[in-house]
Length: 175
Image (cartoon, rainbow, N blue to C red; front, side, top):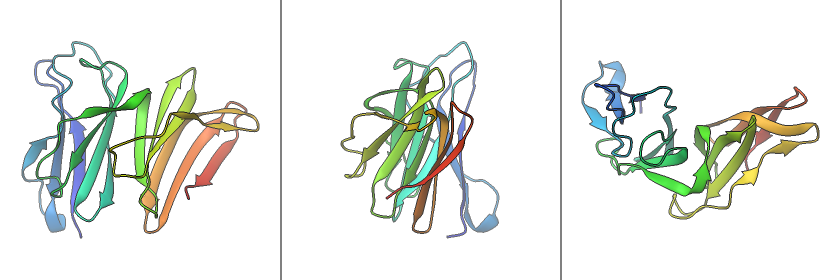
């Protein structure tokens, strides 16, 4: 709809939360809305994310890797009003990992990836808008584990890209 949307992490005296802002129709960024309530005081960096995805109509999801009270958990906040308010953030199943990405496939499946250690990645999926999640599945290729995956979606296409331990670039169309 011509809106520019931005998700970012703040750092106000080591209080690190995730925020959302938008610029409708190319205007300047207006209202900034807190998206997370889970991080609190984090005296060190880094803290990763966030990533945004449109998951239907006026619904958006934001993911990040927590460094606050749920250290290492992949977290997700939801907005059902185009980013005007957010759910605050909850862990996604039992998924722990860094550098999470998110995208929605053409059939409505939400995909989330994360790096789980030693440059190995996993993928989780939800077919019910993020209420329940599949078990984390290892992302592998013929020449080894995939690391640092990236998810993206546009139109009716969702794709996953990553680099294998054998240094091969992989691209997978989701669904």
